[in-house]
Image (tube, rainbow, N blue to C red; front, side, top):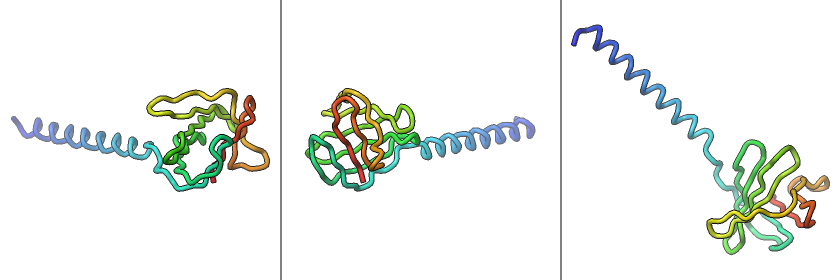
Length: 120
């Protein structure tokens, strides 16, 4: 190999390494947030200690606790979410929509079943 080819190969290797590091940084920054301890309430389960985890920048979140079903609220637009409960490895859709409670921003009210999910 001549000196020009070696310099070109070294440059390509540096570019490939920089690209890989950028991609890794993007994946790390966009990964799921860690769960935070919270106090939760659901109409079906009452009040309990839970783990709260944001799953998207739009406000979608999950709450989970030992011995309780996990709940997922996926935002469809500001103040409106669709709910799921996780039983085992299955996500089961909940009826209706969840609307942010105008009297308590930590709570979401279901417009079909009148159930409530809160996380503080």
